[in-house]
Image (cartoon, rainbow, N blue to C red; front, side, top):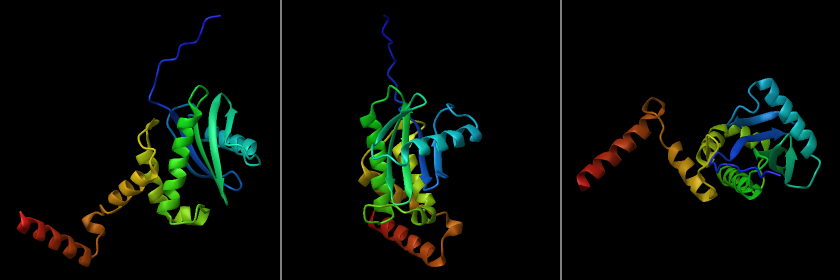
Length: 179
């Protein structure tokens, strides 16, 4: 029997999903074309939810994919990779996402749907800090929260209040005088 030799790849994550109690999409980011249409994606999401929402395990093999997942009150978090991906790597991404959101939303170990929906910008930024194009960039929630906070401070001038603009100008003058 001929052994299958796989080329090493940094493209570990195929998708990140967050579903509600009914299995409806709150957030989905697919990093490849395994499910190219929205119809196929939603069918996959329903299938994955139906297979996982009543179990206590954290890992599933479904449709040739490795799925790691975690639930929190009224949310289900999923990180999906290919069938030969290391489950521990995928779990590190899942834990980083979950812990980052918990810290950013300042909740006690649990993320809630209403709180998440109010802070979707932070969710998008956190996911982008953790995974880019399927490549894992960060697995430390503290670093993710710090970077999201820095990016959140970069408010365009047109969206700043007068006091914010004046404060920024004062800080720039202060730093230029100190040089």
